[in-house]
Image 1 (cartoon, one colour):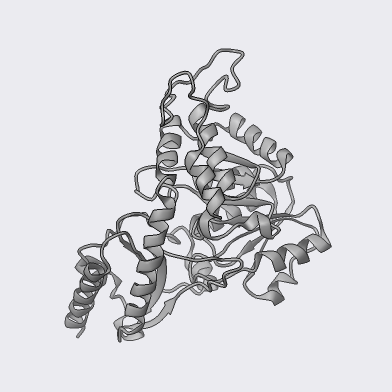
Image 2: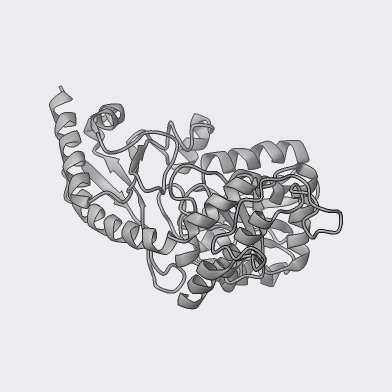
Length: 374
């Protein structure tokens, strides 16, 4: 782990002719005809650099950068044939699930939703499945999907099935899906990789050169390439990823213990850090408000002073959200019910603020909530 971080921190494209210690932004669309980059829609020095860094962090050979994480997932679906069978975990980011549902209708995919955190459901994966897609820890509820067990069982039935893990919340510091049997690791770089709520991007990481080339072809013709400035910003942010994550981990542990003691909180959701698949975890948790405080999220949110309610997370500043009306707003009521998603569930993303300040802010917000109840 330490070696991969060090290599990633020091990797640069060849800047020997200029002597720079930081790669400049290559904010240009075209290169000479004999250049390995040729055209930025195909590749660019800044994009190439961040791709190499991310591949190193994931202990992989190939990484393809996209404009967003959703663009990476959409490109994945472009690799499939019409009428293919797709298995998607039931607990998953709302927009990801909605994309699979929409594309299943358009491309006549057979879409199967299972609870892949349950070994019994893993055994229900059809043998003809072309793609299995899941997050671990899951969004929401932070459940664990055992990557190795799933990959072993699925590949035994059909070696050509693609096992795809959205590794965004675990980060490449704490989980390496490809070493556990997954074929592709997906990231929304907008989250921890950026870490500052100021840039968007996505990555598809794999060991297979054929898969990497297929992703690059989809990206080239679909135009979903990351822009050079975003690539440069993400490269800069990776330099502090291990430091930021160390703080996120420490803050999460302290804030989770604090929330567990809060009478208005009925349950706190945390992932299982087993030290094998998931080495550590930080930043984001979910909790349920007590049922007696129905419809209280808005009052709680508005009383907070240090938590932004914007669409974002995994950054240096803390954020609060209600998955029902936020990350999973694109799902209808029935789809939310199938996921077990209710109005009482709240997501907190802790930034780098002192924990004493975060505790004080949450405490006064709970006090405000109590005072507002009839």
